[in-house]
Amino acid sequence: MQVAYVLYDEFTMLDIVGPFQMLSAAIGLESVWVGEEPGPVSDHTRTGALVASASFGEVTAPDIVVVPGGMNTSVHFDGRIREWLIAVHPTTTWTTSVCTGSLLLGDAGLLSGLTASCHWAASPQLEQFGATPTHERVVMHPEQRIVTAAGVSAGIDMGLTLLVELQGREAAETVQLALEYDPMPPTNAGSPSKAPAETVALVQALLG
Image (cartoon, rainbow, N blue to C red; front, top):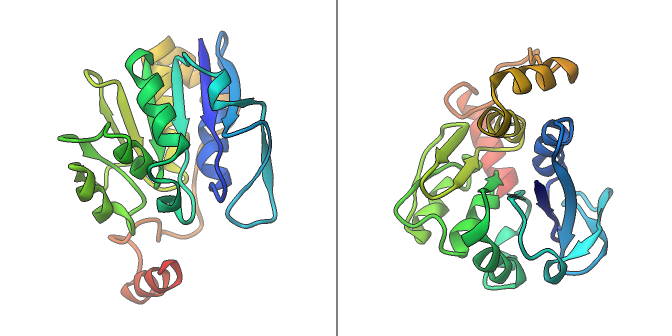
């Protein structure tokens, strides 16, 4: 089973590395990093990069697609990612996104009439694609074979959720324990409903 991890200019590193770490630890899943062309692709900090091992044209029938979020995601609307998602989604087992990656699924027409998750600051943008935003960490639509995850760390939860679907709860628990995924953050401001109002305002200003 092939898992295609989508890379594009200014993607967010943990959005894609989180689910990759979970899924790559499972038996029988082949990972391929795909982009417009093979080679290094810069993340949104411009200090890190991942390497696309194949172009969109070379990956034509992935079983699972993972689309990360990033900065300036809208720059990629109506482009190669959209064309590729439209081409491969009809035969995927799951087409998924993390953070603002759901905007790219929406741009490809895959979220119309569905609830979908996204980074909280960008969630309202889902409405332009006919989707209904939700702040759930992972949203699954089995009939449409669509999964969307909220911001950044929710991609790790999505990876485990996919493992439960693909290989069962025991397999997911084995991977979770092997990777010691047992988050206990020292702060409790991971969503707008938990963070102080001044922190929410500051982050909104920083994100524009």
